[in-house]
Image (cartoon, rainbow, N blue to C red; front, side, top):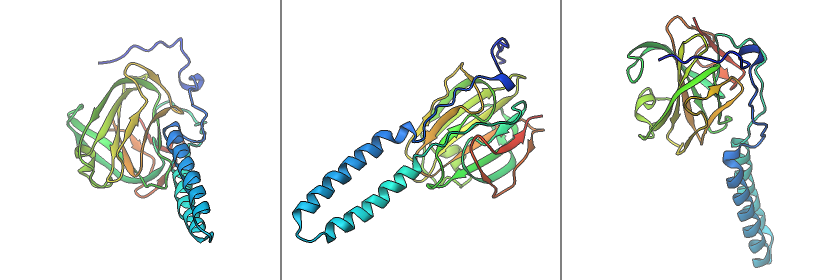
Length: 240
């Protein structure tokens, strides 16, 4: 099924910039505030309960470091892709390339596709970005297991969300957000029928996880195995 695009709207070089200007991701705002209030409250109790400041100091060091790690996890850099977006596929996530191969995709395409996978460690930014300009055909969420995200079976057996995007020239790109052994929540902002653009947030995955991109055969991979990626910046492929 192909969508008809309204080319009176700015697409490609003049596309609409819908980037949300947030430095701490909204998915973590409440958790960071609640944790900070809890640390302060418990710190006050410890300070008043002991004659020595040692318990208070140990508590502040341990939980202060834990809170800073949470802050690092929920950071969300403001990024703009400045290159030509036509037939360009940018990395949907920060992380490391763990798969570049032709693979059978039997859920939607029922044929072979170029599959590029990015693994995100808990230290990576966990915001996800739209990898191509186009229109969202559908969004499907599937419950599943929580295998380690770098395992091949994680792509199909783990909890995941599938987002199909059709580019202005009719090519279909499937993006799959995959939960890992630690990840327990996948958030997807893309909505069926909406126009979407590079620079726009696709969603967020909490803790270690992975994002797969399925591209038409003939697409040219622009990354290598083990290469680090920066979401919305690294060009991972060119469409045919």
